[in-house]
Amino acid sequence: GAVVSQHPSRVICKSGTSVKIECRSLDFQATTMFWYRQFPKQSLMLMATSNEGSKATYEQGVEKDKFLINHASLTLSTLTVTSAHPEDSSFYICSALPEGAGEKLFFGSGTQLSVL
Amino acid sequence: LAKTTQPISMDSYEGQEVNITCSHNNIATNDYITWYQQFPSQGPRFIIQGYKTKVTNEVASLFIPADRKSSTLSLPRVSLSDTAVYYCLVGDMWAGNNRKLIWGLGTSLAVNP
Image (tube, rainbow over all chains, first blue to last red; front, side):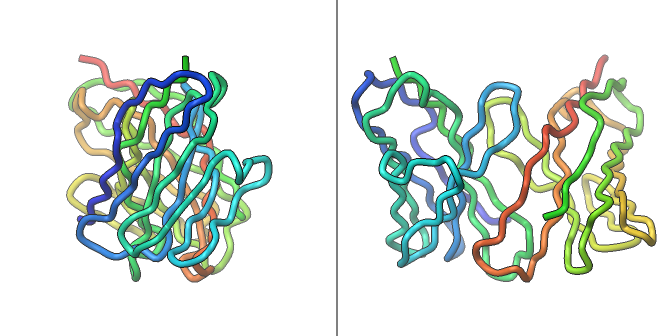
């Protein structure tokens, strides 16, 4: 099956710093990638839809200036959490949608962000 | 966007068959039904997808009645490693690149020795 690689798996940073998370589709091209956030024992919340070569579409309530998404190629999307604060601590997950896969999303392994 | 309803949690024992039912009364004609599995601190993993009747793969079966208002994920002979959260989602595979899937709380399955 398709493989989505997400790095880093865990990051601890100081409040006020920025953190970049990478999401790569290793064996397929993905024109669309999705970024989710998940708090403990809660479901996945879609943050934004990343489209290659165009601006990301953010969900209501998600600050686009705080969560910068770049999808510069068909195999890479990045999420940058700018000026991170403790309330941004969460599990961030990306997913990619191969062409022709229907609703079969392939997910990265997630990134646990802890902001001190 | 169709909303889904699943039991919050289920308990089972090793070797048993587990059936998790999901209700999706407002499913649309173009919607497919997809199930994912998620272990703690990992991204979800695709299990199975179907449109109607029955679908079977190497890990599970998916039963969908004629009215498609519900679906049942069947896990044969579960083991301890099947302890996870299982999500049922419905979505339109032809809705374009910006289609969204709404994730419910899923069903937390605990498999006991």
